[in-house]
Every structure is written in structure tokens, then in C-alpha cells.
Image (cartoon, rainbow over all chains, first blue to last red; front, side, top):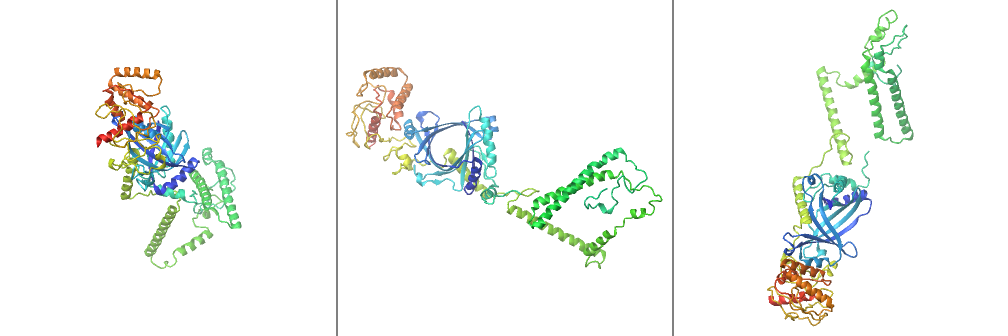
Length: 217
Length: 399
């Protein structure tokens, strides 16, 4: 299971966000360049199509593959009270013949996406991962070199933390409290709920980027 | 009462009388309640504290003056405000209790008959009077000759001007605060609002982005444009089967992946028996009329169908006798199973194939058809060959 929230930030403020995250997390950023292939199952595998994502990490010299299945999210009155989305997720490293394997099973490529950006890891109550990426689409199949951003002016910020059935409340509160640190720059919400941009983002970004550092007198 | 550092008492009135005044013949005791309320001890302590604070500030300013360095105005102003607040509190406390005191001396008698009129007069002390006069002259300089109502008007105009100047100064200060990023100490901060048009654009972009990332909207390439590029990125070169027309995407097409890297040639190694979609059983390895590349097959020729219910037991595998027997037993069991489970078993066997390699997209659906029909032996090691042959057969049929 994982707790996840998403938000958007204008590309011009991404550098300021990076500085803020660097200050919060301490560790340097990790580059992200992931080719995500989303496969949907064919009719032979059941009435309801299932979706599987294959992620190829291109940031490392040797590409590594991960398979990821995102399950249903928690529903009900309790879920509505939590400010993060809690959903089941199964993830595993796989060899590079995974794609062929899934094709053999009958999965078909639904869409693909190239995500370029960076990530930070933060440990407070739960291992929290913050990724800031721009989603790029490929004009031709598998043409990762020709990828163009879907929305050039806006990037996606995603905060995830692994959770279990018995501790998801604590993890959710840890994620929410972390989101408050980012409040001057962006608002985060459950995936599917739009937030808009924050009006104080420009001022906050300016103060983060300024060298003199606005000290309050 | 001691002089508290030059504190100016209101309007030159007599200082609040202390019980010890002008050497009374008999010391009168105050009402104990009043005494308690007055709490002279605390007043004394506070007054002393105030005196010390003020002298400290004066010393600091002396130091600044000597070293000619600029003081930190924030700190200085803070200290001043503290001092003035403390003084205000002391005076307030005393005022509360001062009603209990009457002017001393209470009675007129021979001693104070002469001095009392002086004490009672509200006339200002001479120096205070002089100060007052000079200030009044300054104020009414130039307009003292005019009639009174005009003087009043002029004074009002001056007051208005001063008021306007103060407002302008306040505005300048607040603008500077905003420009330099300082928070305002009081009053609400203005939150910049977004232009509506801009907000709508951003909302639209946001929806696009979220839909793309979460659901893949706007990223799907239509089926007719889905052709594998001739040059794949490096991470996909070994992963995807190369070759023209080989795709496993979208529609339920009949094209199959042709070959896989383990085989040296880029051709199809096809041996074995396959079944067409129509369910006809094809006998031994049929060389395809299309790209005939069976000759460079590296595996020994085998003939079998990819169905567990195989009647022709063509077993050329170097499998031990036991394995064959097991397979026969399996087949018998399979026969007894309902069709659905048979297909599942077939799928299982497919998966167990160590040489899984590339399977055609519709192979499993084909197997569904197959299992219901005939019994044919299913040899796992040569699946690839089967599929390859099927491809060729389909292409030949399609033509």
C-alpha cells in the first residue's frame, strides 16, 4: 500500500522548490528519467481489463526495469477524512524481458510516458519520496529522444510513502505534515482532485532564490 | 516622593501626596486598606526598575555616540516602548488610588495660610509659562493678526496637511515593506490574486497533466500510427523484438512477432504442427510458402501442435521415457477436464516453458480453440518454432 498526493507547480518555480526540498531533506537530489509503459490486459485475461506499468529507469548507465501494479484506492467515509490517497500498490524489479513476457500473456501497450525530473527522499515517521517531474509524450512509438512535454509550463509533484494496513494513518499524517512545509509554493491533493496554483508561489520562490535571504528583523 | 528621572506629572499639578509631606506635626496613618491598594512598595520597586532601564538606554546611546556607530533601531525602539509602557502602567496604578488622597494640607491653618494660594493656583510655573508662550507664538506665526475664525480655519488646514503627509508616509512605508519582502507588523497582508483568465488557463493545463499522468489521456497513439521505429532507443533494443511489422499493440491483429534474439537468424524457426484459426490440424512441419527460412533451423525438426490434446504423439525430444509417460498421463487427465481448465493448463504450460521467448499475441486465444478440438501432444521446448510456423501460415493464408 502507499499514501500518495499530487500537486502542480509552474516550471519557473521548480528551481525554488528544489532549493526548499534540498533544505528539508538534506540529501542531494536524485535524477529521474523514467520511460513508463502502461500495458492493459486483453480480453483473454478476464472481463475487467487490468493495467500494469513497466518503468524503465534510464537515469542509470544500465537501464533497470520495474513492474508496478496500482490497485484500487481506499474508499468510504474514513478515506474521505484522510487528506492523502491510500491505495494498494505492488512493485517489483524485473529483468528486461518483462515487456516480452507481458506481451506474451496478452497485454497490449496502452500508452507510454517519459518522466524527467528529480526526486528527494525524506525520513520522518515514514520514508517519504518527493518527485518533481515533467511528463513528456512521444510523437512516435518508443521515440524517447523526441519526447515533448505534455504541459510545458507545469510540472507534476508527487509525494508517496509506503504504508501497511496497520500504520497507514500515521503515514498519512506524516505525509500531510510534510505537505505543509511546501504550502507556500504549492498545494497537494489526492490524485484526481485539482488544486490550481498557489498565489504566494511567486513571492515564496523569489525569497527562496534570493541570495541575501530575507531575514525577519 | 522621589523624582522619577524627570517624569513629567500631568499638568504641573501637585505631586501625589505621600503621607510624609511638609513635616506634619503628627504622622497620620493612612487607612490600611488604601495603603494596601496603593502598594507603595511595588510602586517604589517599579519606579526604581524604570529608572534603571532608562539610564541603561542612555548609556547605550552614549556608547553609540562615542563610537559613532548606528544603533539598531529595532532594538532601541523596542526598549523605548517597553519603558514607556512600564511608566504608563505605574501612573495608571497610582491614579486609581489617588482619589483617596486629598490635597495636603487638608486644613487651613496658620502654617499654610500663606502658601496655600500658591499651591492652589493653576497658573503655570514661570518656566513652563515661557515655554508655552513660545510654542504658541510659533504656532500662530503669521496668522495672529487675523480674526479668530480664520485662525481656526488656517489651523484646520494645517492639521489636514499634516494628516495627508502622515498617510503618504505610511503608504510609502508599506510599499517599501512589500518591495523588500518584510512582513508588516500589523494589519492584514495583501494576498496577490491571480488574473481569472490566467487561472483558467492554468486549470486547463493542470487537468491535462493530471489526466495524462494518471490515466494516460492524450498519450495514446492511434493504431495506424503505431509502427515500431526502425531505430529503437537503447533500452528497448534488446527488449522488443525487432523486425518490421512486428507489433503487439492495440488491435487484435493477426500479425505476430517474428523472431527472438536467441535464434541466430532473423528468420522463423518453424517446426511443428500448428493449427489455423479455423481449427484445422496441420500435419508435420510444413514449410511456409512465404519466407522460407526453415533450413537454417538450429533445432531438430519436430512436429507437434500446441495443444495438450494431441493424438499424434510425435516426440522427438530427448526426454526420458518417464517424462513421456508423465506427459501421456497428463494428457489423459487433461482430456477429462472441462474445456476451460484445459485452456488454463495450456497457458500454464506455456508459462513454464523455459524458452518462452516470443509468443504471438493471439496464441492463447488460439489455444482456446484448439483445446476443444483435437488431442495433440504439446512439446514445450519448441513453442517458438510453432509460433513461427503459425505466423508464416497466417501470412500465407492472408494472402
